[in-house]
Length: 104
Image (cartoon, rainbow, N blue to C red):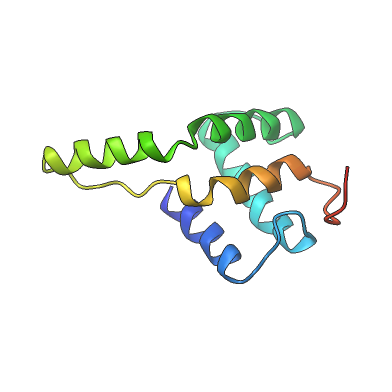
């Protein structure tokens, strides 16, 4: 998760548009890593599934709840993907081929 957050944050800080060709290597690597972790094939179906999972998980209130639970219990606060979810979802929805920033 740290690799994902760091990689996407670097791309965002560099001004990489998630719909651009410059996003391709970043998102392809993330898709490959997530597919490996979930024992899935990194195809279009998996990209759609991953985008849906990230969209559903993108709730800053839920994230804040878990941060507070970890703090109250004295546990290490685990970094999350909430700040980078929108960028990843846009790149996933753009698909592996068309990345010209225009409409699909």
